[in-house]
Length: 554
Image 1 (cartoon, helix red, strand yellow):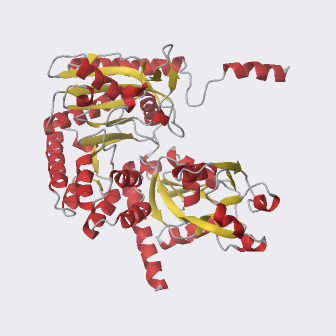
Image 2: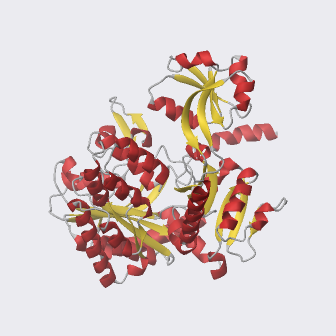
Image 3: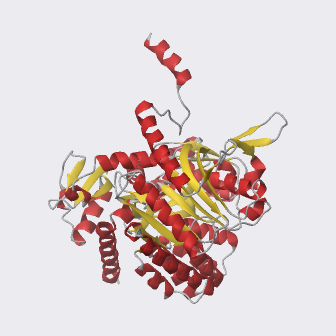
């Protein structure tokens, strides 16, 4: 009977990444929307409802296309490819350019968007409320958009939040000095957004950019904080475009101070959103208790021109379900003492032992990490740090969702997880290599079609061979990977190699070294800003300890 009931219930499950909103939460969502409708109307915004289905080409045949893997695609009765609405800003820009005649327009919306590729801390169906301002430009218009976003979050009952402001023009200006190609710039943008200084440095060296350009771009992941960041950034470059971007942000900040919202504002010049989509200032809303942004916006002059009429534009979207999570977190707010605790995700074993040594050298009372215990949660005696012991593969998840503020994990795990977080430091222990290995005679056949590759790093392997345009069969294994070529299950393996002893004992060898692996310090994107006073000094001390270790080795 139980089996029949379970089989029957399978027909009523929902696809991954979507969920039903039940009465209590739905009522809270209705109240939030009602508050925003009233606020939008008071500021002169007119409501629009864009089509839920659009032609695929609308979002791909423009200079700022949406990646095809993000869209839910289907074919209509005429054979045309159509998609579920993937983006509201593009839809509003299409309306403003093709269906409105005025030189100015203020539009608002309450709509769902759909992201096929969403995973982790993101949903595939996202309830948004947003505004788009067309035909208004300059620092005052940008400041108004940020201040209005702040006031919207306040009206929704949030108080413990910040709005991070950046400017894509600063990065574009630095690029002009670097000589990077468009593809190299886009690769670099991903590393900078993740605050991954290691891969940023590697990509820059490979590009051959000048020493000054490299130094300026390498500084981007660290350029966040108060208005003093703008002065720091100014010293890094003479590029007119970059300097004009900083001047613009100073003017915006002065206006925000006049508007009385400066206490909610910070700057992050390492927030480099899509270079094709955004044209100037960009901003992101981060709330305590939510491990991902609650709001995102910026200026996108030039987007309407791609639909036939040139209009300046700035706007933002609020993720309504994330706002509800922030409201709940605020209602169950921790005490001031609890707020000061930095939550750290670690994997038990050698990595935790290495971390204990580093934390102690940094002045943290982490001796508890050396104790033999079955406890999964430990706190330092001074109640400043709390450690969670989790599986290595779960460390990025705990950090991405904001349960842990920071974590330590191997680069191999990060590559496989592709979590949305910041990669702050290479800790330089637990070093090894992620390699292709097999019998020596297989080296010549690595590029042959239909190569069979055994690995536990399925996602990383797929990305690697896809980037090379090679057709391979990936075989997922969970352990004893070296056995696969010995038994004929695979041609080669893709796995971490430290000393290579197991390979040699079985007649195997490294055929290609693909990635250098070591332990990395990672941080939640929100925690890094909301707990900056606790986390940034720790990172600085860790850097100092690592540099001291380098000096001792020399």
